[in-house]
Length: 325
Image 1: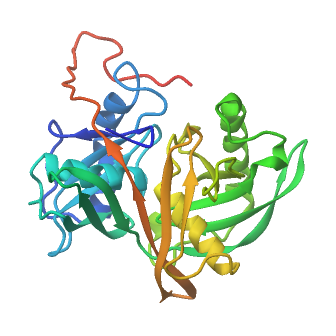
Image 2: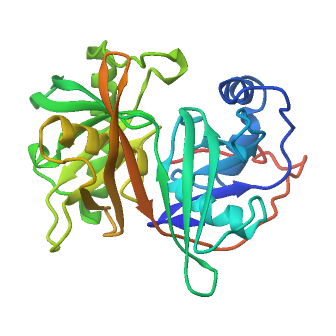
C-alpha cells in the first residue's frame, strides 16, 4: 500500500508468533532475535532504502482489535501515522475487523500506546478515508543546535508518538521540493546527529523505550491555497517520508497549540514533498505528566498497490539483504 506516496509493506505470514508479550516486549524481541527478517523485507533486493513495513501482532489491551509493529531501514519506530491510515483500510479488506458503514471504528495497540482508528466509507461501502486519534502529543521547547560550517540553528522539539526536531528549511537555503531531495537527506542526517548529541531533553515521561529522536522535520511554505504548510521528514537512517508524516503533523499541532496558532477543533492541511496531504486537528487537551498535551486527530487516504511473496534462497549470498543509499 501507500499513503500519500509513502510505501507500506504489510507482513501477512512468515514471522514467529508473540503470544503473551506486550507491544514493547515484542519490539525488543524483534530487535534482539529476529532483525534479519526486517532486513530481508526492507532492504534490497526486495525493498529499498525508503521502504516501510508493518507487522500485525496480538493485541495488548482487551478493547484493541490487534497490535502493530512498525519497521523501516534502521529498525522499529514507535509510531507511524501513514501506516495507521493504511492499516485502517487494509483491516477492512483483510477481514481483521467487521465493517459497519458509514463509519467503522476500532482500536489498535502500537509501541507508543493505543490508537483509535475511524474508517469512513463511501456510498457503496468501500473505504473513502481513514482518520485516527493519536496518543497524547506535546511540545517540549525551542532550542538551538550548533552545526559545523553553518552555526546555530533554532528548532522546536515535540512529540507526536515519536520525537522530532522541527526546523524552517529556509535556514538552509533550500526548499521542501523534490529537486532538493539529496540535500534534504544530507542535512536531515547531520542535524539529527547534532541534536541527539546536544539535547538531553528527549525523554518520554513514562517509557524509556520511547525516549529517542526519531527524525528531523523540515517546514516550508505552501504555494497552494488552503494548505497550511509543507512537511518533509527525514527519519531512521536518512529515510525520507513521501507523505506529510502522521506522527509529525501531530507534533506540529502541539507546537502550534502551544504558540496560540491552533485551537481546539481547528483543522489544518499539511502537504508532503509530493504535494499529497494530511489533515490534523486538536480534539482536546489533557495533562500528561508535566505537559499540557493535545490529542490530535489525523486524516488521510491510502491505496493498494499489490501483493508479493518473497523467497529466501539459501545459496544466495545476498539473501539477507543489503542497504545502499
